[in-house]
Length: 264
Image (cartoon, rainbow, N blue to C red):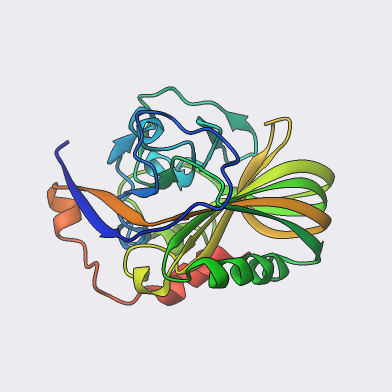
């Protein structure tokens, strides 16, 4: 499949702290995106990129797999696939992806998060850091710790003809509740002006420390968590050229459907 590469948005940013290594062949401070959230919401679930290509562009990320066959969590350069039953597999590099984001993770700032009694509380504390460092930039967050509770979901693989995502999620998702579990949250913040391309604000995926379970994070509770944030100053996106994508009504307002699939 042919792909169109779009490069947008480049501004200067000085790193405060460098916390972790990045892949040498990936461009630093670039958010790499596969297709658009709008196309995914409308039911464009065909593969646009591959796991291998995602790895060439970053070391941390979130997304999904062809046919919406589970949630994608990328951590330390490894891509994990959270299946409908919550279990984790490691897909090969040829596995296809209809939508995802990644960046070569470099920690610009690190903070301790305290008394996180809900997902909204997590967003509030992280957003305070974003406000100080650049609300109109992109930000990936890695959050590690021990969780009192973690609630997340994954979904069943879809078959053609594909239904819009909000419709599919009415029946084809499964929910999981874990208690006293250690793990990692991978979060992505996108500015408000990205509302036609991605989810404005925060979006989180979760994986247990033992890499046995994970999915799209819905709710958490924790006393103390350690967070590293990477503010990103440029944007690169790849798009398919096929007829289905070209005929998708990407300009329509799907904000209500996006909110519906973000929550339980």
